[in-house]
Image (cartoon, rainbow, N blue to C red; front, side):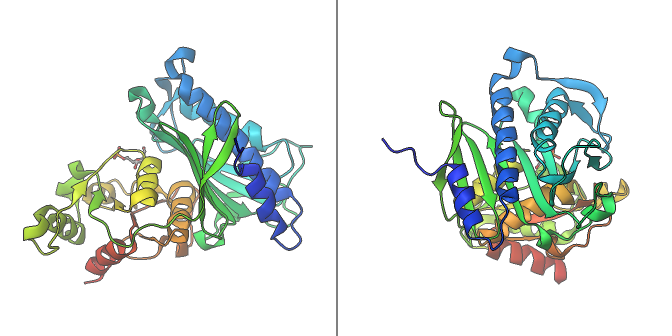
Length: 336
Ligand code: P6P
């Protein structure tokens, strides 16, 4: 019985192909894999170890924090701060950049992450996930500032997520396509299960929180109404709808069978003074890098997400991502 290609095999192979690679990037991806294995084990145990429910605190977004938001954030920091691969971290769960303690070795990378996206789904046993994005740290900077993180999504060195669902699946891109690795819990290894993930360019499945429909802008309303009109309408085909309220699960479904995911800006978010619901640095950018690498597209409805010049660490953006032809149609509607 074969072992299969482990994530470690893949990382080392990839490193061999990178001129002057020092092994630091390899070490960092392994640290991230360690964090995700630990989180997978905590998610799996849930109520057995008393990690469900509210923490009794709020995060920088003013949202109620779940116990697992805090626990997984600490797991991620512990896995990354000791091995000298990063110079700084930024997380949905921390207001400011996390600088390493004095004396800890620094490395050439910075990581932004959402340690447990969709965490409220844990209380109802629905899939959740970790999202991460890897950026180059400015040379010789011991303690990167938030300003040092303000790099457009096109500068990402790598991005990925780990989906904690029926299986725990790590999905990674380093700019050479998208690979998937399924966790063999008995062995404690991620094994490659998909090598060259491609998103179908067309789809008949859309994902949006339809409870916001009264707040939508006209182009979004037009697109969704046409999907709902089905084969008798302008699109000439029926559509299905999904909404998991876990971005990682939605993106994984789209990578697996196509689809479009939308969290557009609307009157409600504008009135709240926000540019959208999802965060650029540790949700939209990493997911957009992955989706584009799989042949999909990702815009705000008005511009390519990876081109956005970030202004602040927890900046929000509208997101329209998935099957290329559908995203282009929605984006065209916004331009008309
Ligand atoms: P709503 C989870 O909180 C999240 O950030 C994404 O993972 C998810 O797609 C979205 O928000 C769900 O938002 O408004 O449906 O709860």
